[in-house]
Each structure stands twice: as C-alpha cells, then as structure tokens.
Amino acid sequence: MDTKTATEPGLDPADVFTKAFEYTRVNDLRQAGLFPFFQPLGAQFGNEVDIEGERKLMVCSNDYLGLSQDRRVQQAGIPALEEFGTSCTGSRFLNGTLSLHEELEHDLAEFLHHDSALTFSTGFLGSLSVLSALVGRREVMYFDRENHASLYDGARLSWGELRKFRHGDLDHLEFMLKRDADKNVGKLIVTDGVFSMSGELADLPGIIELARKYGARVLVDDAHATGVMGPGGRGTPEHYGVEDEVDLIIGTFSKAFASVGGFLAGPVDVVDWVKYMARPFMFTAALPPAQVASTKKSLEILATEPEHRERLWKRVAMFREGLSGLGFDTMDSAGPITPVLIGEVDDAIAFWKQIWDRGIFALPTAPPAVPPNECLIRMAVNASHTREEIDRVLSAFADVGRNMGMIS
Ligand SMILES: Cc1ncc(COP(=O)(O)O)c(C=O)c1O
Image 1 (cartoon, rainbow, N blue to C red):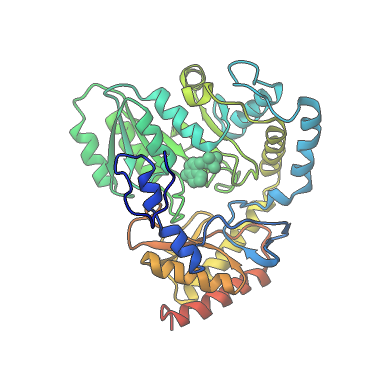
Image 2: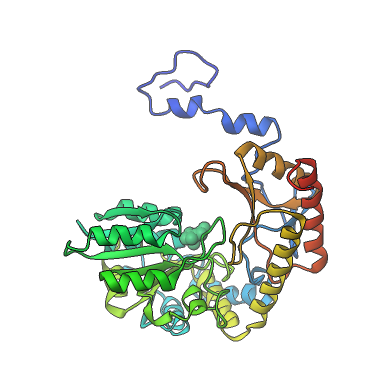
C-alpha cells in the first residue's frame, strides 16, 4: 500500500492509516514552536534538566520526595542488576518471580497495614489487572468521573458495568447505589485518592459510609498519595484515619518511590485471585531486578525517614500560598500536585510557552486529561526544591500572568 502524506489528495477512507495521514495538529504546533510535549531531557542537575543545551527548572515531576537523586536508591539497583541480571525475561507466572519481588511485596503489605500485596510492571497494568480480574459480568463499578485513565481502561477490560458519578459528588454516587440497591450483584466503588490533575482529595470517609450502607467494596488508586500523604506516608486512608475500612489500594512506584511499577494491597484471597486470574499481570514480563531493589530501598527510606515528607509539605504550602497570593486559582488541590487553572487549551499552551522561555519546565494539560475549558498548568514541587527555586517559578508566573491579563 502506498504511503501518502496529508497534503496528497485521494486518501482512501477505507485505509486504517488515513486518519494518521490526515492528522496535522501536532506538526502544526511543532512548527509554530508551541508543542509542549515529548521534550527530550538530557542530564539532570538537582532540580534542573538539560534540554538541548539549555537548563530548565523542573517543577512538574512526580518525584515527590526527591528520591530519584538519592544515592542510596540509585546504588540499591546495582547489586541486583549484577546478581539477577538486566531483566526477568518472563512472566511472574513462569520464570519471572524473584525472591526480590516477594520481599518487596512482603515489605509493602506490612507498610500499608494490609494482609498481602502484589506488584505489577507498571501502575497502569495494575489498574487493568485488578479491575479486569475482579469485576465480573453484571457486577457494577461506580467511578468518580475524574478517575485516572488506567482505571477507565481497566473497566473496559472487565465484564462489569460502569457507572460514573459527578466528580466528588457523593449525592450522585448515593443516587446510583440506591437505584441498584435491589440488584444482588457485586459492587465496587473506585476512586483516585488524590486526583492526578487537580490534586484534589477524594472524600474517603463519605465514600466508605456509602459503601457500608449499600454493601459495596472500596478500591482507592493512591498513586499520588502513597509515600507522601498521612503522617506515616500510607496515603489517603491514613490521612483520613480510615485505613481499616478501605478494601483495596492500588498504586505506583513511579512517583514518590522514584522507580517504576505498580502494586495492589488487600486481603490475601483477593490479592491471590488477581495474581492467578489477571491477564495483564500474567502475560507480561515481571518488573526488572534493579527496579525492584531501588523500590525496596525507597520504601525503606519513606517508611523510616518522615523528614522528606515534612520538607515536601513545607515546600508545597510555600508554593501554593505564593501562587494564590499572586491571584492564581490553584483549585482545591490538597495533595502534592499544584495546578494553576488557565481555561482554554490555546491559552494553556500560550502560558506554557512563556514560562518555558523563562526557564521553567511545567506543562499544560488538555482534554481528555481534564474537562474542556479547564486546562491547567500542572505542577509539583518536591522535597528538594529550594526557596530560591520556588521564588524563580513564582516570579515567572507573576510575569506571564500579568502579560496574559490573568492577574493584576
Ligand atoms: C492516578 C494514577 N493511577 C495510575 C497511574 C499509572 O501509574 P504508572 O506510571 O505506574 O503506570 C498514574 C500515573 O500517572 C496515576 O496518576
């Protein structure tokens, strides 16, 4: 079949490639110097990154505790690499379960105060695995509308029914649960603990109350909270004091743990069910040894050194107060993410371009990650940002906000 470009006439509507040939949005933005994404990062110097010879101050990484630069986490991977090799070259089911995986799962279950834990090659695969294995035909999932994309894809892989309630609206959730009250089927309420774009927290106590009232189970995706929220870093359940009442937690190692991978924590039988039934767990290669060892070290650090969290929350408060003081809308963010609400996608891109030119690496969000007209600049300061670095970001925002008439 001929390869054509978008400018060539006569594209065949029956060719699956046609939509790609016709798609010009990214190239148009790139040519105008307005494409924010896929920036190739070079070396990292503290919180600065090299991009094609220029240094930018990174303020949107999910490395909340700054552990990606911690020598202990870096060094932990090396002996594992040497002892176990570069890859597991197989599924956990077959040749891919290492003693290291089991040690990490043991430590994690203990840390999260759950009976059992299972790790996945990414958090995304964890969402796919848990929902597809657990929610059967005619069973129902109740989703906060702003749940993470991985949960939506997990729901699509499952055989169950999906009901979406308005973001944070527990009256709407109750309305749905009440409507299903006489259906004698399994029910699972699924919510992000910290919403990944706005940084808002789910109302877990309210959700748990409804779950008990209507006989549903609760699953929390705490990707942005494990390690950082709660005095011990055990996430939003600890933050709210409801650890015993959340049935299942899923999360990621790609944020506070400064590694890669995902996890599930919950009752032994349920975790085992997912382990033996989930295709996105079974038919993929296991987490590589070096990542598992680094994750184990991060877990040890975040479980025993609360000072990283204390520093993080001081920085977050400083940053958020600075932005609100300038007149920006940081929404109801209460987790480690700090958004600045911009509005239309073109304005978010224009805002991004101006802070980028001032040496700040923070990116805009666009639908489907956020609702239309609610585009943001999504940021996260971490435990290792200095006051001077935070002031640099605030000063760039003040400048650009005034240029764009957003603040006075
Ligand atoms: C809420 C939430 N869940 C799951 C994931 C997926 O995590 P991972 O990067 O480990 O695939 C993310 C990552 O962005 C997330 O924000």
